[in-house]
Image 1 (cartoon, one colour):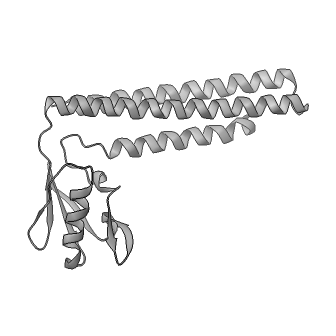
Image 2 (cartoon, rainbow, N blue to C red; image 1 turned 45 degrees about the vertical axis):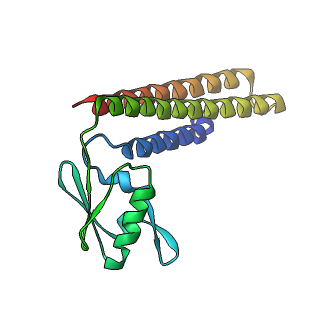
Image 3 (cartoon, one colour; image 1 turned 180 degrees about the vertical axis):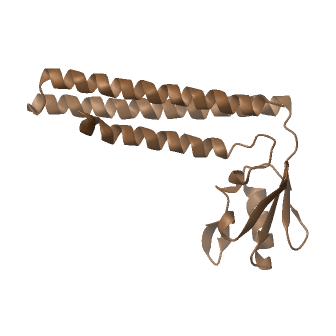
Length: 184
């Protein structure tokens, strides 16, 4: 049994990991270098993540410093941050780019909390789609005579238990991230 459901459970784990990385890019008032993960810079014609072209440090709770290995990249990094959805204006002193994260307003915290819930719901839908694919595959196997009705029922129970486990896990992550955002 475990072998048949393992493929689908692995897909669910990947969905959970994708949700984690989505949540990591949502800023919560404190400086977190992960907010830069999705921002790329044109580096000799190749879109390259910022963390691969310089050092990123967090010297203070609400400050990120980016020191590129080549000073010629300062303007490109600044432009990439400005055109991103980060919503922070970088300050460039010729050597280092600084990103100062302002305190989040109550309204912005509520918006971010809604965004977290939406991303969580999207992940739940993905988990349920994986379950549906599994159920369809198991029913096809039963029609072909590859599975008995008892084995089919056992597999359906197993995949439902796995689905429930991941839905609960997503709910926990949504709650934790929402509390993190709403904490002042």
